[in-house]
Image 1 (cartoon, one colour):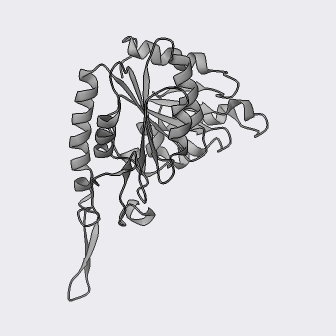
Image 2: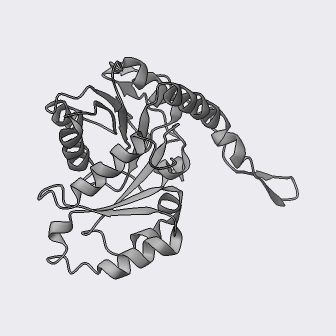
Image 3: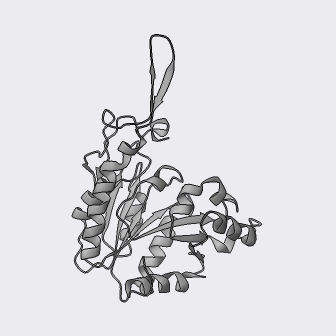
Length: 261
């Protein structure tokens, strides 16, 4: 999938405007290949495992570092336009009285979201991925090294807007948070099950638009439960504030050890 969507093509991600090393250069990236013999027979060699081996090792290093610093790390993943940035902004503002939050923002281009989040006073590092449709553990490690980390208790990784590729890349996070906007339809978890099945938390966003979108809440919850019965579900409106107390309360409880991550 990544080869088809652009990840296999040359591109130089940047962290706060500075070139960053690719975890998988195009020549190094391994994917299933088809080999043709002289008799025109074909065989498929599955080397899928090697794509993620280096990333998983780096993710394990990240996780050990984050845990050693008692840092709660959220990998927030969703489609474009689902309300990630607004949710992160409102979360930072509500936690600000007692919880310092830092942010790593991933986007193909522009630093618009990073500049918006910096207005909260939180430290923010931008990763501009170029053609890459997801963040990987190496990018996160390099971005975290650029982040003023003293006193941080929560680190939010706002992943690239994409429901496919980010689902398979471990970044070393403590919680993976999948967003589902009421504007996207109730069956999105069924259409993109890897993302929602790997998430510990699902946040239904833009609740204030549910009536206008004729959003079927029960159908959406059923879709989530079908792919991930154990997921913790929150329903919020970042605009009106509805549901934000429960969401931020959950984060505080998790920081205090009230929930296994």
